[in-house]
Every structure is written in C-alpha cells, then in structure tokens.
Image 1 (tube, helix red, strand yellow):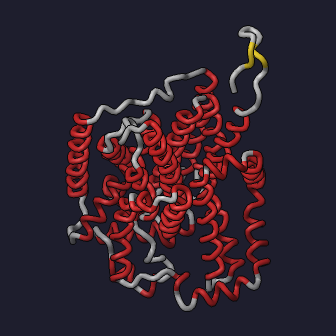
Image 2 (cartoon, helix red, strand yellow; image 1 turned 45 degrees about the vertical axis):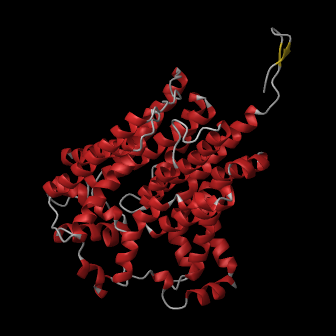
Image 3 (cartoon, rainbow, N blue to C red; image 1 turned 45 degrees about the horizontal axis):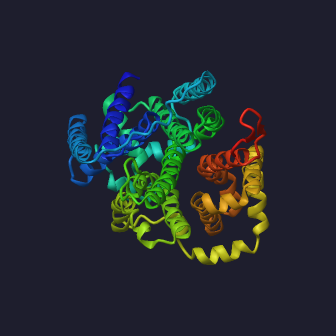
Length: 460
C-alpha cells in the first residue's frame, strides 16, 4: 500500500508542475484536482514514450522521464509568471460552517469509496479479461506487448482501445515491484476526488455561494464514485467531465476578455489547456474519442467560430499517437467490422428493443434524470443560450452511443444490457452540474421582497 501511495504522490507532484506551467492561477481546490488528472496521465505517457522508443521499463527510467518533463514544466511556469501578472481568484475564500459540513460529508463519501475500492483484489470481469490483463502483459514484457495485442487468442481484449488506463496500472506496479491488483483500486478514489474538487471550485467561482457549491458537490459524489472499479469508466468520467466543464469555463473567460477589451485577460483559462483533459479522455477509451468529437461539434454550434475549434489541437495531439499505432497494427474496433451501416439500418427497424433496454437501464436513476429534465424545462431559454456547449456535447455523445448500439453485431438488447448504464454514467456529472447551475439561476431570478429599511425594492 505504501508503494501505491508513493506512486500517487509522485504523479500528483508532476501534475502540480503541469498546472503551474499553464501560467494561470486558480483556486487551490481546482488546482489540486487538475494536478492529479494531468499528473497521472503524464506518468502513464512516460511509459508509452519509453515503449515506443524500444526502452524496457524500469522505475528509475520512468522517474527520469517524469523528472525531466516536470523540470521543463516548472521552467515554463516560472517564465510565464515572470512575464504575466495573473490575478488570483478570490473565490473559495468565503467559508461557513455549513459548507464545511457538506465538504466533510463529501470527504467521508470518498473515504468510504476508497475502502470499497481496496477491499480486495479487483474482480470486475472486464478488468480480469481486458484492462488488467493488458496491464499485466505489459508489465511482464516491460513495455507494450505487440504480439499479445495482435494474438487471435486474445481477440476479446479490445486491442484497439487506447492504453492510458493499463499504463496507469503499470506505473503503480513499477513502484510495487510486483503485480498486486488489490491496491490498484486506490487510483479510483483519486479520480473521483479530483473531478469533485474541480466541480466544487467551478460552482463556487460561478455562483459565489460556498454552501450551495458544497451541497451540490455532495449530491454528485455518488455519481463520481464509479462502481466499475478496475475498468476505464472512472478515469473516463473524470477526464471527460473535467474537459467539458473547463472548456465551458474557458469559453466564458474568452467572452469576458472580449467584453472588457483586454486581450489575454489575467487569470483567463485557455481553450488549449482545457482541451488537455479531453485529450486524456480520448487516450482512455474509444468513447473518449467520441466525446472529443462531440465537444468540437458543440463548440461550432455554441461559438460559430471555426478558429476556436482548431484550438483543441492539444487534445488531438494526445490522441493521435495511439491512432497511428492502431492504424499501423490494424487494430480495428468490433463495431466497425463487416458492414456496420447495414446493421444500423436493420436494427433501426426494431427501435423498440433499444428503447426498452435503455428504459430498463435508466430506471434505477430516474429521480436524478427527472431532476435534470425539470431544471432544463424551468430554465429552457437560459439553458439554450448559456449552457449550449454542455447540452450539445451530452446530446451528441448519447446520439453516438445509440448509433454504436445499433451497429453492434452482438445483438442490440445484449449490448444495451451490459453497456448503457455505464454510458449514462459518463455524462451524469455534466448533466448534474448544468442542472445545478440552472436551478440556481431560477432561484436568483425570483423577485425579492421589498427592503423596508432602504425604502425601495431589493435588487434581483
């Protein structure tokens, strides 16, 4: 366990350098969440780079690569801080005992999740047969085992899936010195906590209410704590949610800069930086690539600015190496085999099978989704004008999921039965965040009672 915690600490330090290198000051909570997500991706990326260079993995070599990148990021950050005067946000300085109670309850939720995640060896079937199997094969080979990925004996492992999660497992295993999948579960509470810290900070910055931000974060904590421990859902949820919400914030900062006529306003979050998290999502699972495409299309719809979409290039740069590797080795996804469009057309004639399957998988969370829909209905005009990016992204991603379900050769009912609940979980935090913002807008727009002491009406 000590070795696992040490691997987490090293990744966090590397991530702090990445956040510092961005040159933008942000509240501590958000910086901590971003640091973990970027840091563990950087450490996994170091193993990927060593494997592509043909260098066998060792802890010393991996640490050298991470140390060099960390040093470069620190130098970049120092140079930026020397030339720019970034105004640190004062959001999050206002605290109350009520918000502190909510925060403690959230921390207790994540602590309980950590106990569950490390209670024993990981038993999720897709970990045993795919994600963990890949990581262990890579660990034994001390690199990416191409013969294993190409072997027809293991055609169920989804060789086409990006390798960020297996490499993350191998990063921790290098510290352990031996394969012990029990403590790999400790990574999942870190992903959940990181995305909750980002959500907590963004809500407080935007709404100015620590109590409301803390209460919403507590309500969303179960959605962040993915029950599928050992597979890619937890990391994908964290990276995807962080990427979309930070992109939303970056676009708002851009609009604020334009209105204030200050180019590159101090403290503004850049689209390029936000896209790093979308790139990590694309490097985690194929659904992450679909999310990146959905976010790019949503930007076109939201901003009508093609130049802004090109600023997502860091995300593409992160996803591109594996796409090239996949093309070279002809790792094709099972959904694209044969004639997928003919399957879509055929299965579309029996949409009732798909709809019944989706309804069955959604029933356990119907109160949550009823609340989201109610918030959208009550604030429809505001949602369309102000939250278009998130809503279009979520809508397109669900549309892509429906098309993927219809293109399967394994039977629509079977695929929906085993995947749709996980697909909904990927957008739950984005939907919950948007609903919380819209509900706060409804509350804030209500007429206030007269202020007798001032003799007039209180402002809205």
